[in-house]
Image (tube, rainbow, N blue to C red; front, side, top):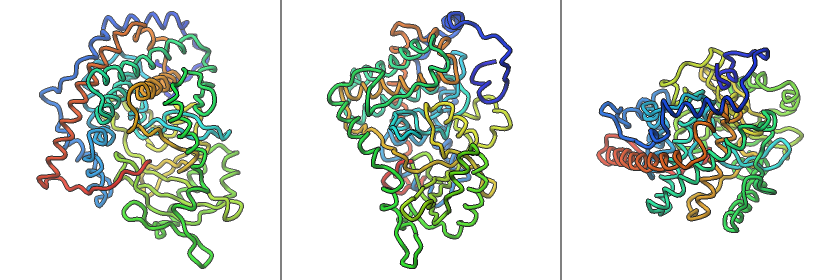
Length: 469
């Protein structure tokens, strides 16, 4: 039984003896005989590859119909936007590729934009994975392949040529490999203690002056992205002592009619929090609620932004109550244990497992039979602006994301076995650079199909600026 399966409740036995990391490392190396690392280099769509537009149409079922054109419009904006929104397409493609046989809790959507900064309970800014809607137990390489595909496609958008894209992808894979090798013999608890603090010392590598300036600017932005700052942006007094959200259709619209239902859901959400956090939450009360459209792939799912006040009107708390649907990879993987069939609980469990330090307010609930998870909306959050990154700065960011992904996988998987499979040579780096280039071509082709279908009127689309999730 694998460690990742234990994490999600399949088995727990502290009496069983685990093999030494050196033995597990050797086992990982042996797996190369069955699935050579070079086998990961090839991507060719099979004859029976599902139509990507039909997969997207299937993923739109159950969403709010009036927002589906907005989702399609956001995805049509660029190949990278298409990649972000089409996790279901890539999941189908990855299911046909070779796998090493080492499961972990995967993020499921580990593209470059799903790494970022946020605040810990100690009010320190860390850099980590920050989106877990698609998280599930699966092959570690599916996460790494989605990451390197995003490196390649983002590199194209930033004007990188083929050689520069290959370099960036290889740096990303090297970051992943080097970190699993660093962690393979480290104490288990020591791995769980690891954080990446971009605002102070950098335990991973020295930054160039350029990337150091980018990180410093982003950290400074994060430090001012909190509940009080958001209050001034999205809420206004009613004039009769109350508060309301500033309407901005279709992005932000009133949910006043659903307020009682949302309060009931939040009361049940409190039961998913540890007792000491319920004490804290009980000192807040709901003031206003709104529907809020977020992201690219999430557009059309139901999401609420809720304002609560605690110790007066200058003590706001914004909670996002976001619908959680079936993970994109779920159709291609064994089912999870029944207790994780609630998709909100699945997301929360994965977030707590993969992040070095998680939002203390993260939990789950249900509304009208649909699964939701709850988190703070703006808690010292900020993202690196990738659009302007090229050269050494882009490579460093790709490398850093690879490093962070390896640490996340090492928390629920086995870095010794993964490290044994990856090896210390550049064989896997080269293979995934080739794969990412081919899949970059595939993404551009699929994006063109969407754009053409919109042009012909076969798919309705509405142009709209993306909003962060």
